Length: 231
Length: 253
Image 1: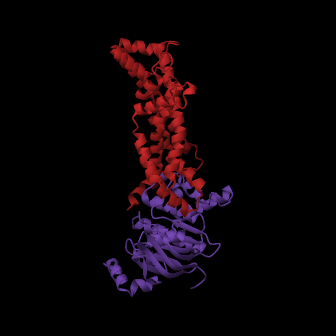
Image 2: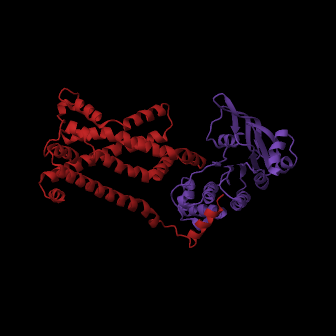
Image 3: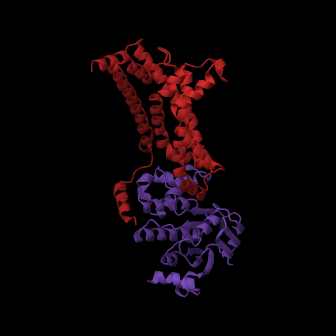
């Protein structure tokens, strides 16, 4: 374990009798960038939701350092039928900031995701990609220590994806947050993370530095999973 | 045409029977709609928003009550308010209050069910997003109401339409008493039974006109109240906003 970060121990999540997640031990170092990849139904979203506290695990512990704040962007985030500015501002409404500080935070976050041109547009007017960028700005505005993003570019083409990945890099450089991002695309994992966790049927199949795992996977399952990516 | 013209003229003649009928109809519809909305909307939002044991059975009961036959609602109120009934001492049978009570029993489940459905469609995504950014339950509920406001507002039309067009229940508990509990629909029935078909049709047209005027006023409120929020916005629009929005539509995968 590097600097003290998140520690997961004996984590089990069950839906009825079915075990959907079973993680014996996992450490997420502070200021690191993790990508969780794996096929559909591998347990990526479940793990992220447990880390975010929106889902209670059946067994085990998740220790997040005291004082850390956690921001979570779900796979299908909600964009409200109000201005883009208000959509982001709501995230810092209860942060005890003055109006000008709030505006500064919102504008900063919108600038990072490249959405300053649309501050007054309504949420319902946005395209899927623009809406995802607004919801990302919402989480950015809160300046969290741990950022959990579930498929943050699922509604975007490659151009939008690169914009968001650049925004993410800028944000992480600026605020030194710990990142955990779920993605089904190994190429995205390679671009945004330095460590990777590969999940298969709720278990960790492999983990380590992103470059090592993607270039030289050890387990058969990961080799097979990545072989589709290389096609 | 002559009958229709006469009917329309008499509606606006103070003291005429038709103007009296119109007033009673409006009074009954106004109170039934208001009370049903005041009970049904909060109850529906609460049911749709909360996750509790037995929610499915509550929704099933609600769906059943949404199809409650008006005559049955009238019969229930009739028994409760009749002399030998539990509230017989209040002597409310054959009054507008009795008609409003029967209407509230009929309309409240409809408004509740519609509100619950409207909220349920939004809640899952909104709730997860709200949790992700740490919104309090109170704020989450406020944003939810704000998000569904247009739909919730539209239930006024549903409630009013149901109320103004109801005949079975109001006939049973109101008794169609002249100058007291006679409303448009019961008057139409009476005129039809008497063979005054022209008058019955004229009354029907007046009823439709009332409904049209009320709906138009409500729509005006809706548009002014909800879209003006944007016009009042202090956030300056970017000069290229439209172009950027168009560009975004093309970029979406």
